[in-house]
Length: 326
Image 1 (cartoon, one colour):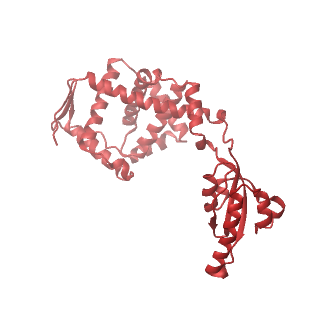
Image 2 (tube, rainbow, N blue to C red):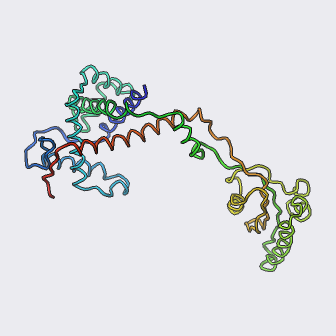
Image 3 (cartoon, rainbow, N blue to C red):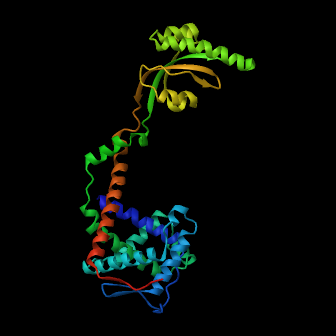
């Protein structure tokens, strides 16, 4: 079931890619030279030219990172991979019937809310006939069937794999650090200039020394804090997440250990002494809610890794001769 689901997703993506890109109309190829020989089958320089120009066009609006390393050699390597895969499809006698292609076309129309006329019009605008599209779709389905048989059927994603990933990436699923802290706040009168800053820092430093010596922090807050509520709650800031605080205070709190008192912290509001009472983690999204997404992610990761190795093995067992030197 997992393999069928992935095949359906990939087929939809392939169709959207075909509709979005602009492949050239099929035309008779002129054998202008031999770029490579793969198990006695030829890749022509004309094929390499077409692939190179198409990829250049596709990369035109791609991020700079995707363009790095692009070269004629990369194109030829892709064509060699494609040829090896085509040969493997024939070797394993993998077939896709016309009925299966028709069913896939109907799925594409349904998922994209297209009539037959709208689909054909969209293909025509991209220089692709409906018959040529069906040929391409059949080729892609054959490759996906090969992938399923040779690669994906051999992949398993266990419960432990999924749970280990979840535990290692809890922040990706909404889990955040939660803090409970107290503060002693010293207001700075901005009209007082440097003298006011020195005055407040002198008082705050003395209180900090008392707090560091182990005196009751809540009592110090009730005595010295300029926060009106401190007289009642001992400077209790309650429970909060990092993003709930001023950046200067958030950075300080995040680096404290429970029971630890900070150095003096200056913010636009004034001067602060923070004591972290507790640090914990919020629940975030529960495992069962994200389990299926993680399974898909790990399945794809393992599929990509196994496919890369599978292609390397094909290369190792094939007779490949690169003729092109440019």
